[in-house]
Length: 516
Image (cartoon, rainbow, N blue to C red; front, side):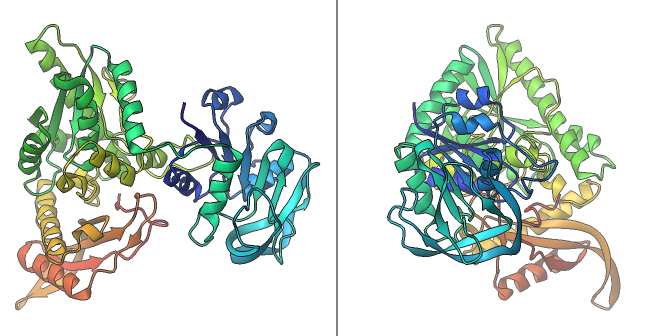
Protein backbone atom coordinates (compact mmCIF):
# COMPACT_ATOMS: atom_id res chain seq x y z
CA UNK A 1 0.00 0.00 0.00
CA UNK A 2 1.29 3.46 -0.90
CA UNK A 3 2.37 5.69 2.01
CA UNK A 4 -0.09 8.30 3.19
CA UNK A 5 0.10 11.39 5.38
CA UNK A 6 -3.12 12.22 7.21
CA UNK A 7 -3.67 15.87 8.14
CA UNK A 8 -5.98 16.70 11.03
CA UNK A 9 -7.61 20.04 10.33
CA UNK A 10 -8.12 22.49 13.17
CA UNK A 11 -9.46 25.30 10.99
CA UNK A 12 -6.31 26.84 9.55
CA UNK A 13 -6.54 28.79 6.31
CA UNK A 14 -3.36 26.95 5.29
CA UNK A 15 -4.52 23.36 5.87
CA UNK A 16 -5.09 22.61 2.19
CA UNK A 17 -1.69 24.10 1.40
CA UNK A 18 -0.07 21.49 3.66
CA UNK A 19 -1.83 18.78 1.66
CA UNK A 20 -0.68 20.30 -1.61
CA UNK A 21 2.96 20.55 -0.54
CA UNK A 22 3.00 16.88 0.42
CA UNK A 23 1.36 15.81 -2.83
CA UNK A 24 3.88 17.92 -4.74
CA UNK A 25 6.46 15.72 -3.04
CA UNK A 26 4.70 12.67 -4.59
CA UNK A 27 3.31 11.37 -1.31
CA UNK A 28 -0.46 11.09 -0.97
CA UNK A 29 -2.07 13.26 1.70
CA UNK A 30 -5.60 13.47 3.00
CA UNK A 31 -7.31 16.10 5.15
CA UNK A 32 -9.69 14.84 7.84
CA UNK A 33 -11.57 16.31 10.77
CA UNK A 34 -9.59 16.98 13.90
CA UNK A 35 -12.38 15.06 15.65
CA UNK A 36 -11.74 11.84 13.74
CA UNK A 37 -11.94 8.77 15.96
CA UNK A 38 -8.84 6.74 16.66
CA UNK A 39 -10.42 3.72 14.93
CA UNK A 40 -11.17 5.71 11.75
CA UNK A 41 -7.69 7.19 11.75
CA UNK A 42 -6.01 3.80 12.06
CA UNK A 43 -8.17 2.42 9.25
CA UNK A 44 -6.45 4.93 6.95
CA UNK A 45 -3.07 3.36 7.84
CA UNK A 46 -1.14 6.64 7.89
CA UNK A 47 2.65 6.68 7.67
CA UNK A 48 2.59 10.03 9.43
CA UNK A 49 0.16 12.49 10.98
CA UNK A 50 0.19 16.29 10.78
CA UNK A 51 -1.81 18.54 13.09
CA UNK A 52 -2.68 21.78 11.27
CA UNK A 53 -2.76 25.28 12.62
CA UNK A 54 -5.99 26.97 13.67
CA UNK A 55 -7.44 30.22 14.98
CA UNK A 56 -8.24 29.01 18.51
CA UNK A 57 -6.14 28.95 21.69
CA UNK A 58 -5.64 25.54 23.30
CA UNK A 59 -6.62 26.77 26.76
CA UNK A 60 -10.04 28.06 25.63
CA UNK A 61 -13.12 26.17 26.77
CA UNK A 62 -14.33 25.36 23.25
CA UNK A 63 -10.90 24.79 21.72
CA UNK A 64 -10.90 21.94 19.15
CA UNK A 65 -9.05 18.86 20.40
CA UNK A 66 -7.95 15.52 19.02
CA UNK A 67 -7.66 12.14 20.71
CA UNK A 68 -4.64 12.21 23.03
CA UNK A 69 -3.88 8.58 22.17
CA UNK A 70 -2.68 9.71 18.74
CA UNK A 71 0.65 10.55 20.36
CA UNK A 72 1.06 7.00 21.65
CA UNK A 73 0.52 5.10 18.40
CA UNK A 74 4.17 5.03 17.40
CA UNK A 75 3.24 6.93 14.21
CA UNK A 76 5.29 10.12 13.65
CA UNK A 77 3.33 13.31 14.38
CA UNK A 78 4.15 16.86 13.32
CA UNK A 79 2.22 19.71 14.94
CA UNK A 80 2.18 23.04 13.11
CA UNK A 81 1.42 26.26 15.04
CA UNK A 82 -1.85 25.44 16.89
CA UNK A 83 -1.00 21.77 16.28
CA UNK A 84 2.29 22.13 18.18
CA UNK A 85 0.60 24.00 21.02
CA UNK A 86 -2.13 21.35 21.24
CA UNK A 87 0.46 18.58 21.40
CA UNK A 88 2.18 20.46 24.20
CA UNK A 89 -1.10 21.06 26.03
CA UNK A 90 -2.34 17.45 25.81
CA UNK A 91 1.01 15.97 26.87
CA UNK A 92 1.37 18.00 30.06
CA UNK A 93 3.18 21.12 28.90
CA UNK A 94 1.85 24.65 29.22
CA UNK A 95 0.75 27.21 26.64
CA UNK A 96 -0.03 30.82 27.53
CA UNK A 97 -0.63 34.20 25.92
CA UNK A 98 2.59 35.65 24.58
CA UNK A 99 3.75 39.05 25.79
CA UNK A 100 4.62 39.79 22.16
CA UNK A 101 2.57 38.34 19.36
CA UNK A 102 4.46 37.10 16.33
CA UNK A 103 2.94 37.63 12.88
CA UNK A 104 4.77 37.62 9.57
CA UNK A 105 8.46 37.10 8.93
CA UNK A 106 10.78 35.95 11.70
CA UNK A 107 14.31 34.58 11.72
CA UNK A 108 14.89 31.31 13.55
CA UNK A 109 18.09 29.83 14.91
CA UNK A 110 18.22 26.07 14.41
CA UNK A 111 19.88 23.32 16.42
CA UNK A 112 20.99 20.18 14.53
CA UNK A 113 18.13 17.70 14.20
CA UNK A 114 16.57 15.21 11.78
CA UNK A 115 13.70 17.62 11.07
CA UNK A 116 16.12 20.33 9.90
CA UNK A 117 18.54 18.11 7.98
CA UNK A 118 20.22 20.09 5.15
CA UNK A 119 18.58 23.31 6.34
CA UNK A 120 20.71 26.35 7.24
CA UNK A 121 21.43 27.37 10.83
CA UNK A 122 19.46 30.58 10.50
CA UNK A 123 16.49 30.85 8.11
CA UNK A 124 13.48 33.14 7.61
CA UNK A 125 10.07 31.64 8.44
CA UNK A 126 6.44 32.77 8.53
CA UNK A 127 4.84 33.11 11.96
CA UNK A 128 1.19 33.63 12.88
CA UNK A 129 0.54 33.22 16.60
CA UNK A 130 -0.33 35.08 19.77
CA UNK A 131 0.37 32.22 22.19
CA UNK A 132 3.62 30.54 23.14
CA UNK A 133 4.90 27.45 24.95
CA UNK A 134 6.07 28.33 28.45
CA UNK A 135 6.73 24.75 29.63
CA UNK A 136 7.64 21.78 27.47
CA UNK A 137 6.07 18.35 28.03
CA UNK A 138 8.30 15.71 29.57
CA UNK A 139 10.80 14.26 27.11
CA UNK A 140 10.73 17.19 24.65
CA UNK A 141 13.60 19.46 23.65
CA UNK A 142 13.83 22.78 21.81
CA UNK A 143 15.37 22.50 18.31
CA UNK A 144 14.77 26.07 17.06
CA UNK A 145 14.06 29.47 18.56
CA UNK A 146 13.50 33.09 17.58
CA UNK A 147 14.11 36.32 19.43
CA UNK A 148 10.49 36.21 20.57
CA UNK A 149 9.90 32.43 20.87
CA UNK A 150 12.14 30.23 23.00
CA UNK A 151 10.37 27.20 21.51
CA UNK A 152 9.96 27.83 17.77
CA UNK A 153 10.42 24.11 17.10
CA UNK A 154 10.41 21.11 19.46
CA UNK A 155 10.76 17.35 19.34
CA UNK A 156 10.60 14.17 21.37
CA UNK A 157 12.74 12.09 19.02
CA UNK A 158 12.29 8.72 20.70
CA UNK A 159 8.52 9.11 20.33
CA UNK A 160 8.73 10.64 16.82
CA UNK A 161 6.81 13.73 17.94
CA UNK A 162 7.69 17.10 16.40
CA UNK A 163 6.34 20.62 16.53
CA UNK A 164 6.81 23.83 14.54
CA UNK A 165 5.55 27.20 15.72
CA UNK A 166 5.89 28.57 12.18
CA UNK A 167 4.22 27.57 8.90
CA UNK A 168 6.51 25.50 6.63
CA UNK A 169 3.78 25.14 3.99
CA UNK A 170 3.71 28.79 2.89
CA UNK A 171 6.01 30.34 0.28
CA UNK A 172 7.22 32.88 2.87
CA UNK A 173 9.14 30.04 4.55
CA UNK A 174 11.73 29.35 1.81
CA UNK A 175 13.06 26.14 3.37
CA UNK A 176 9.58 24.97 4.37
CA UNK A 177 9.20 22.32 1.69
CA UNK A 178 12.55 20.78 2.64
CA UNK A 179 11.45 20.66 6.29
CA UNK A 180 8.18 18.93 5.34
CA UNK A 181 10.07 16.49 3.13
CA UNK A 182 12.45 15.71 6.00
CA UNK A 183 9.39 14.77 8.01
CA UNK A 184 7.61 12.69 5.36
CA UNK A 185 10.71 11.03 3.86
CA UNK A 186 13.24 10.65 6.67
CA UNK A 187 11.04 10.51 9.75
CA UNK A 188 7.89 8.84 8.35
CA UNK A 189 9.77 6.67 5.84
CA UNK A 190 7.54 7.60 2.89
CA UNK A 191 8.75 7.07 -0.66
CA UNK A 192 7.81 9.48 -3.48
CA UNK A 193 5.61 6.96 -5.29
CA UNK A 194 2.33 8.88 -5.64
CA UNK A 195 1.99 9.88 -9.31
CA UNK A 196 -0.91 10.35 -11.69
CA UNK A 197 -0.05 7.00 -13.23
CA UNK A 198 -0.36 5.36 -9.82
CA UNK A 199 -3.61 7.25 -9.17
CA UNK A 200 -5.10 6.01 -12.45
CA UNK A 201 -4.44 2.37 -11.56
CA UNK A 202 -5.89 2.72 -8.07
CA UNK A 203 -8.91 4.75 -9.22
CA UNK A 204 -9.75 2.34 -12.02
CA UNK A 205 -9.48 -0.61 -9.64
CA UNK A 206 -11.94 1.10 -7.27
CA UNK A 207 -14.31 1.93 -10.14
CA UNK A 208 -14.28 -1.69 -11.31
CA UNK A 209 -15.02 -2.90 -7.77
CA UNK A 210 -17.75 -0.33 -7.16
CA UNK A 211 -19.66 -0.53 -10.44
CA UNK A 212 -19.42 -4.26 -11.09
CA UNK A 213 -21.98 -5.12 -13.78
CA UNK A 214 -23.92 -1.87 -13.30
CA UNK A 215 -24.41 0.96 -15.75
CA UNK A 216 -23.32 4.57 -15.20
CA UNK A 217 -24.72 7.92 -16.24
CA UNK A 218 -22.17 10.73 -16.30
CA UNK A 219 -23.18 14.29 -15.47
CA UNK A 220 -21.36 15.86 -18.42
CA UNK A 221 -20.84 19.64 -18.40
CA UNK A 222 -18.08 19.74 -20.99
CA UNK A 223 -15.64 21.16 -18.47
CA UNK A 224 -12.34 19.68 -17.39
CA UNK A 225 -13.67 17.80 -14.36
CA UNK A 226 -16.59 15.95 -15.94
CA UNK A 227 -14.57 15.21 -19.10
CA UNK A 228 -11.67 13.68 -17.17
CA UNK A 229 -14.00 11.73 -14.88
CA UNK A 230 -15.90 10.34 -17.89
CA UNK A 231 -12.77 9.24 -19.73
CA UNK A 232 -11.38 7.66 -16.55
CA UNK A 233 -14.55 5.64 -15.96
CA UNK A 234 -15.12 4.97 -19.66
CA UNK A 235 -11.74 3.29 -19.97
CA UNK A 236 -12.88 0.82 -17.31
CA UNK A 237 -16.52 0.09 -18.20
CA UNK A 238 -16.70 1.05 -21.89
CA UNK A 239 -20.21 1.16 -23.36
CA UNK A 240 -21.81 0.81 -19.95
CA UNK A 241 -21.17 4.57 -19.55
CA UNK A 242 -23.65 7.08 -20.98
CA UNK A 243 -22.76 10.77 -20.73
CA UNK A 244 -25.72 13.11 -20.36
CA UNK A 245 -25.27 16.76 -21.20
CA UNK A 246 -28.15 18.82 -19.83
CA UNK A 247 -28.98 22.11 -21.50
CA UNK A 248 -30.54 23.75 -18.46
CA UNK A 249 -30.85 27.19 -20.01
CA UNK A 250 -28.04 28.45 -17.79
CA UNK A 251 -25.18 27.84 -20.20
CA UNK A 252 -22.88 30.26 -22.00
CA UNK A 253 -23.42 31.35 -25.60
CA UNK A 254 -23.59 28.37 -28.03
CA UNK A 255 -22.18 26.11 -25.32
CA UNK A 256 -24.47 23.09 -25.69
CA UNK A 257 -23.79 22.62 -29.40
CA UNK A 258 -20.06 23.30 -29.15
CA UNK A 259 -19.45 21.01 -26.16
CA UNK A 260 -21.39 18.03 -27.52
CA UNK A 261 -19.70 18.20 -30.93
CA UNK A 262 -16.23 18.57 -29.38
CA UNK A 263 -16.56 15.71 -26.91
CA UNK A 264 -18.07 13.32 -29.44
CA UNK A 265 -15.27 13.94 -31.92
CA UNK A 266 -12.27 14.24 -29.61
CA UNK A 267 -13.12 11.86 -26.77
CA UNK A 268 -15.33 9.37 -28.61
CA UNK A 269 -17.83 9.40 -25.75
CA UNK A 270 -21.46 8.34 -25.95
CA UNK A 271 -23.16 11.68 -25.21
CA UNK A 272 -26.87 12.43 -25.04
CA UNK A 273 -28.06 16.04 -25.19
CA UNK A 274 -31.16 16.74 -23.08
CA UNK A 275 -33.02 20.03 -23.48
CA UNK A 276 -34.41 20.88 -20.04
CA UNK A 277 -34.36 24.67 -20.23
CA UNK A 278 -38.01 25.17 -19.32
CA UNK A 279 -37.81 22.69 -16.43
CA UNK A 280 -34.94 24.59 -14.77
CA UNK A 281 -36.06 28.14 -15.52
CA UNK A 282 -39.59 27.50 -14.27
CA UNK A 283 -38.23 26.21 -10.94
CA UNK A 284 -35.91 29.22 -10.61
CA UNK A 285 -38.61 31.78 -11.25
CA UNK A 286 -38.46 34.61 -8.66
CA UNK A 287 -35.71 32.83 -6.65
CA UNK A 288 -33.11 35.34 -5.47
CA UNK A 289 -31.24 33.57 -2.68
CA UNK A 290 -28.04 31.94 -4.07
CA UNK A 291 -28.23 28.91 -1.79
CA UNK A 292 -31.81 28.25 -2.87
CA UNK A 293 -30.72 28.53 -6.50
CA UNK A 294 -28.02 25.92 -5.97
CA UNK A 295 -30.35 23.55 -4.13
CA UNK A 296 -33.02 23.83 -6.84
CA UNK A 297 -30.52 23.31 -9.65
CA UNK A 298 -28.97 20.31 -7.89
CA UNK A 299 -32.40 18.73 -7.40
CA UNK A 300 -33.43 19.30 -11.03
CA UNK A 301 -30.18 17.84 -12.33
CA UNK A 302 -30.81 14.66 -10.37
CA UNK A 303 -34.39 14.57 -11.63
CA UNK A 304 -33.17 14.74 -15.23
CA UNK A 305 -30.51 12.07 -14.69
CA UNK A 306 -33.01 9.72 -13.05
CA UNK A 307 -35.42 10.24 -15.98
CA UNK A 308 -32.63 9.41 -18.43
CA UNK A 309 -31.69 6.31 -16.43
CA UNK A 310 -35.28 5.05 -16.82
CA UNK A 311 -35.14 5.66 -20.59
CA UNK A 312 -31.92 3.68 -20.90
CA UNK A 313 -33.45 0.77 -19.00
CA UNK A 314 -36.64 1.06 -21.04
CA UNK A 315 -34.73 0.34 -24.25
CA UNK A 316 -32.92 -2.59 -22.71
CA UNK A 317 -34.52 -4.50 -19.87
CA UNK A 318 -31.15 -5.97 -18.90
CA UNK A 319 -29.56 -2.55 -18.56
CA UNK A 320 -29.73 -1.50 -14.92
CA UNK A 321 -28.46 2.10 -14.76
CA UNK A 322 -27.87 2.71 -11.08
CA UNK A 323 -24.84 5.03 -10.81
CA UNK A 324 -24.33 8.75 -11.34
CA UNK A 325 -20.80 9.91 -12.18
CA UNK A 326 -19.79 13.44 -11.15
CA UNK A 327 -16.58 15.41 -11.53
CA UNK A 328 -16.56 16.57 -7.93
CA UNK A 329 -13.15 17.92 -6.81
CA UNK A 330 -11.51 18.42 -3.44
CA UNK A 331 -12.24 22.20 -3.36
CA UNK A 332 -15.93 21.41 -4.00
CA UNK A 333 -15.97 19.10 -0.99
CA UNK A 334 -14.00 21.47 1.21
CA UNK A 335 -16.14 24.53 0.44
CA UNK A 336 -19.45 22.69 0.62
CA UNK A 337 -19.31 20.44 3.65
CA UNK A 338 -17.93 21.45 7.03
CA UNK A 339 -16.63 17.97 7.74
CA UNK A 340 -13.21 18.90 9.01
CA UNK A 341 -13.50 20.21 12.52
CA UNK A 342 -14.34 23.87 13.02
CA UNK A 343 -13.88 24.97 9.40
CA UNK A 344 -16.90 26.84 8.13
CA UNK A 345 -19.02 25.95 5.14
CA UNK A 346 -18.41 28.61 2.50
CA UNK A 347 -21.13 27.70 0.03
CA UNK A 348 -23.01 24.75 -1.35
CA UNK A 349 -21.85 23.32 -4.64
CA UNK A 350 -24.67 21.79 -6.64
CA UNK A 351 -22.70 18.58 -7.08
CA UNK A 352 -21.97 18.19 -3.37
CA UNK A 353 -24.23 19.87 -0.81
CA UNK A 354 -26.87 20.73 -3.41
CA UNK A 355 -27.97 17.15 -3.93
CA UNK A 356 -31.31 15.96 -2.56
CA UNK A 357 -31.18 13.76 0.53
CA UNK A 358 -32.76 10.81 -1.27
CA UNK A 359 -31.50 9.70 -4.67
CA UNK A 360 -32.20 6.58 -6.68
CA UNK A 361 -28.72 6.77 -8.24
CA UNK A 362 -25.57 5.97 -6.28
CA UNK A 363 -22.79 8.54 -6.66
CA UNK A 364 -19.38 7.85 -8.16
CA UNK A 365 -16.89 10.70 -7.64
CA UNK A 366 -13.42 9.40 -8.58
CA UNK A 367 -11.84 12.88 -8.53
CA UNK A 368 -13.11 14.07 -5.16
CA UNK A 369 -9.66 13.95 -3.55
CA UNK A 370 -7.89 15.85 -6.35
CA UNK A 371 -7.17 19.54 -6.84
CA UNK A 372 -7.83 21.16 -10.22
CA UNK A 373 -4.23 21.16 -11.39
CA UNK A 374 -3.98 17.48 -10.45
CA UNK A 375 -7.07 16.75 -12.55
CA UNK A 376 -5.42 18.41 -15.54
CA UNK A 377 -2.34 16.22 -15.01
CA UNK A 378 -4.62 13.19 -14.79
CA UNK A 379 -6.33 14.22 -18.02
CA UNK A 380 -2.97 14.44 -19.77
CA UNK A 381 -2.13 10.97 -18.43
CA UNK A 382 -5.39 9.72 -19.98
CA UNK A 383 -4.62 11.33 -23.33
CA UNK A 384 -7.26 14.08 -23.25
CA UNK A 385 -6.47 16.99 -25.64
CA UNK A 386 -5.20 20.28 -24.17
CA UNK A 387 -8.11 22.18 -25.76
CA UNK A 388 -10.38 20.46 -23.24
CA UNK A 389 -7.98 20.35 -20.29
CA UNK A 390 -7.21 24.07 -20.43
CA UNK A 391 -10.79 25.33 -20.43
CA UNK A 392 -11.62 27.79 -17.67
CA UNK A 393 -13.73 26.35 -14.84
CA UNK A 394 -17.48 26.91 -15.12
CA UNK A 395 -19.76 26.51 -12.08
CA UNK A 396 -22.23 23.64 -12.04
CA UNK A 397 -25.19 26.02 -11.48
CA UNK A 398 -23.99 27.91 -14.53
CA UNK A 399 -24.99 31.51 -15.15
CA UNK A 400 -27.56 31.30 -12.34
CA UNK A 401 -24.82 32.16 -9.84
CA UNK A 402 -23.42 34.89 -12.08
CA UNK A 403 -26.71 36.73 -12.05
CA UNK A 404 -27.29 38.44 -8.74
CA UNK A 405 -30.92 38.14 -7.78
CA UNK A 406 -33.66 36.51 -9.84
CA UNK A 407 -32.78 34.59 -12.99
CA UNK A 408 -34.78 35.58 -16.08
CA UNK A 409 -34.47 34.81 -19.80
CA UNK A 410 -33.78 38.49 -20.46
CA UNK A 411 -30.95 38.65 -17.92
CA UNK A 412 -29.49 35.38 -19.19
CA UNK A 413 -29.45 36.71 -22.75
CA UNK A 414 -27.69 39.89 -21.64
CA UNK A 415 -25.12 38.02 -19.58
CA UNK A 416 -24.39 35.54 -22.39
CA UNK A 417 -23.53 38.34 -24.78
CA UNK A 418 -21.37 40.18 -22.24
CA UNK A 419 -19.59 36.98 -21.20
CA UNK A 420 -18.87 36.07 -24.82
CA UNK A 421 -17.25 39.48 -25.34
CA UNK A 422 -15.05 38.98 -22.26
CA UNK A 423 -13.79 35.60 -23.54
CA UNK A 424 -13.28 36.88 -27.09
CA UNK A 425 -11.14 39.81 -25.96
CA UNK A 426 -9.21 37.79 -23.36
CA UNK A 427 -8.31 35.29 -26.08
CA UNK A 428 -7.49 38.06 -28.57
CA UNK A 429 -5.03 39.51 -26.04
CA UNK A 430 -3.43 36.05 -25.54
CA UNK A 431 -4.38 36.10 -21.86
CA UNK A 432 -6.76 33.13 -21.72
CA UNK A 433 -4.23 30.50 -20.66
CA UNK A 434 -2.55 32.85 -18.18
CA UNK A 435 -5.82 33.19 -16.22
CA UNK A 436 -7.65 30.73 -13.99
CA UNK A 437 -11.01 32.26 -14.88
CA UNK A 438 -12.37 35.33 -16.62
CA UNK A 439 -16.08 36.00 -16.91
CA UNK A 440 -18.92 38.50 -16.64
CA UNK A 441 -21.36 38.93 -13.75
CA UNK A 442 -24.80 40.51 -14.15
CA UNK A 443 -25.58 43.16 -11.53
CA UNK A 444 -29.25 44.19 -11.30
CA UNK A 445 -28.09 47.59 -10.09
CA UNK A 446 -29.64 50.44 -12.03
CA UNK A 447 -27.32 53.34 -12.69
CA UNK A 448 -27.69 56.53 -14.69
CA UNK A 449 -25.87 56.79 -18.00
CA UNK A 450 -25.82 58.81 -21.19
CA UNK A 451 -25.96 57.20 -24.62
CA UNK A 452 -26.04 59.64 -27.50
CA UNK A 453 -28.22 62.50 -26.36
CA UNK A 454 -30.42 60.32 -24.19
CA UNK A 455 -30.33 59.63 -20.48
CA UNK A 456 -30.33 55.90 -19.65
CA UNK A 457 -31.15 53.97 -16.52
CA UNK A 458 -29.73 50.48 -17.06
CA UNK A 459 -27.97 47.67 -15.21
CA UNK A 460 -24.25 46.96 -14.80
CA UNK A 461 -21.82 44.18 -15.67
CA UNK A 462 -18.87 43.25 -13.46
CA UNK A 463 -15.80 41.62 -14.94
CA UNK A 464 -14.10 38.97 -12.81
CA UNK A 465 -10.65 37.66 -13.78
CA UNK A 466 -8.35 35.77 -11.41
CA UNK A 467 -5.10 33.83 -11.31
CA UNK A 468 -4.88 30.66 -9.22
CA UNK A 469 -3.33 27.20 -9.01
CA UNK A 470 -6.19 25.17 -7.58
CA UNK A 471 -9.11 27.53 -6.91
CA UNK A 472 -8.67 27.35 -3.14
CA UNK A 473 -7.03 30.78 -3.18
CA UNK A 474 -6.92 33.34 -5.98
CA UNK A 475 -5.57 36.78 -6.83
CA UNK A 476 -7.37 39.26 -9.04
CA UNK A 477 -5.66 39.45 -12.40
CA UNK A 478 -3.99 42.67 -13.52
CA UNK A 479 -5.59 42.79 -16.96
CA UNK A 480 -3.99 45.56 -19.09
CA UNK A 481 -6.08 48.72 -19.05
CA UNK A 482 -6.28 48.71 -22.83
CA UNK A 483 -7.92 45.28 -22.83
CA UNK A 484 -10.39 46.31 -20.14
CA UNK A 485 -11.22 49.42 -22.13
CA UNK A 486 -12.02 47.36 -25.22
CA UNK A 487 -14.19 44.97 -23.19
CA UNK A 488 -16.07 47.83 -21.54
CA UNK A 489 -16.63 49.68 -24.80
CA UNK A 490 -17.88 46.58 -26.60
CA UNK A 491 -20.26 45.58 -23.81
CA UNK A 492 -21.85 49.02 -23.45
CA UNK A 493 -22.09 49.38 -27.24
CA UNK A 494 -23.20 45.86 -28.17
CA UNK A 495 -25.22 44.60 -25.20
CA UNK A 496 -28.57 46.30 -24.89
CA UNK A 497 -29.58 47.07 -21.30
CA UNK A 498 -26.06 47.67 -19.93
CA UNK A 499 -24.59 51.13 -19.47
CA UNK A 500 -21.83 50.48 -16.93
CA UNK A 501 -18.94 48.01 -16.59
CA UNK A 502 -16.86 47.55 -13.41
CA UNK A 503 -13.79 45.41 -12.64
CA UNK A 504 -13.60 43.21 -9.54
CA UNK A 505 -10.27 43.58 -7.69
CA UNK A 506 -11.05 41.23 -4.79
CA UNK A 507 -8.82 38.28 -3.93
CA UNK A 508 -9.83 34.93 -2.44
CA UNK A 509 -9.88 35.13 0.52
CA UNK A 510 -11.71 37.22 1.61
CA UNK A 511 -13.95 36.93 -1.47
CA UNK A 512 -14.84 33.79 -3.40
CA UNK A 513 -14.18 33.57 -7.13
CA UNK A 514 -17.86 33.36 -8.04
CA UNK A 515 -20.12 36.13 -6.80
CA UNK A 516 -22.79 33.76 -5.48
